[in-house]
Image (cartoon, helix red, strand yellow):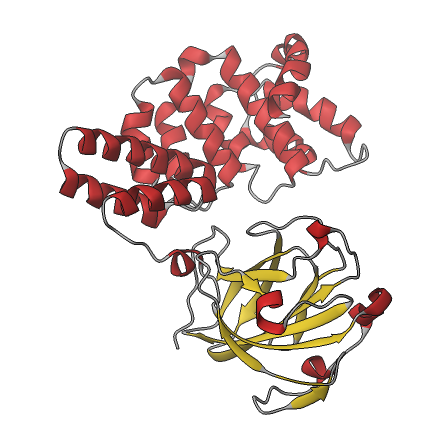
Length: 373
């Protein structure tokens, strides 16, 4: 999208260049108009005029344009990024590389803005990758981190091919610890396994593996999704029994051994249709903090953290993947409670028989937050 905007707006540069050099005070109102652009044409006319002004900025003002992406919505980021690229295209020999590198190093800036800063540097410096990327292996920008992990993998493979197995193992371990993208994690886990190293995938992702499961409760015709069954309204008690779909149901302790934390409810409770199950877990947090609760579930679902509803998705059999649904909640110091509802419908197709979920706790980057118990 950003590339498309550059192509569209580059025609405006002849107009923009006639505006002359701008002071920071003169540039600020136009940046603000680009920051306010929204969907369905909101602020579009003002943004078009403002883009001409911003695209006429001096190369030395590139970091100011990039900084305007901080906190901007994705559409506004596109406009601002396109303006920054237009400035760079007009002045390729005058890019303020040192200032761009300083901007890149400040991790508080927008990940997209920092990524663009790196791309602008790399466009004029062939050594940028080898010089800058290795230091970004723990970066909060997932794009920059991915590049750093990819480079680390490449270096580890070279070390291994030259016969340095011990050194290569160390390099692969470092890359694995930093990896946050599923494909890289799987690749690194497989490579380490070849070297005789078994990695703890659930811990790396932050999957919860110990659960108490109860069910089935009635979900015929999908009507149970809106019903508050006892697990939602009564404090957890391991010995509690409630009326379920086929008689009294009790909590069942279950530890999943799946490397990606998948809990198979058909295995735990037996196969049921038009049914609801609940999964309960406790989470001991070292301190108070915001956390991501990332749920993968092929069935309709709800998620509560400390009794507060965090997610609700009345979607059946639309596929399942890691981090399919992302909710945010605040962990309190000490014991926290997590409750998941997993609702199965009555479809009889073979692909509609799966009844399962996975849940992990992590930060915004995907780094695992582990229970202290």
